[in-house]
Image (cartoon, rainbow, N blue to C red; front, side):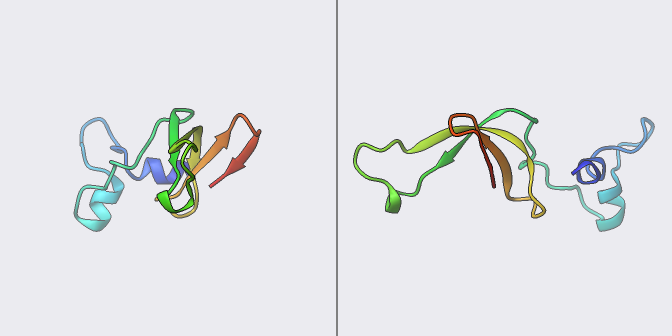
Length: 83
């Protein structure tokens, strides 16, 4: 996870290019990046939701899984870690 973030951050103060930019020739996608321990919401699909069940559940972001578009989260109420 640290290498993932370092490859998307500028490597020196003098230059604003990142290792990702030098390798791929384009700016890295960063819109999916989140601050560690921020609140995120897991959305329950309509298919699995009953009438009076909440649409989402509040959890805490703790990192990324090996696939960058999957978040690792902590569910404080159930004291459970999940992806």
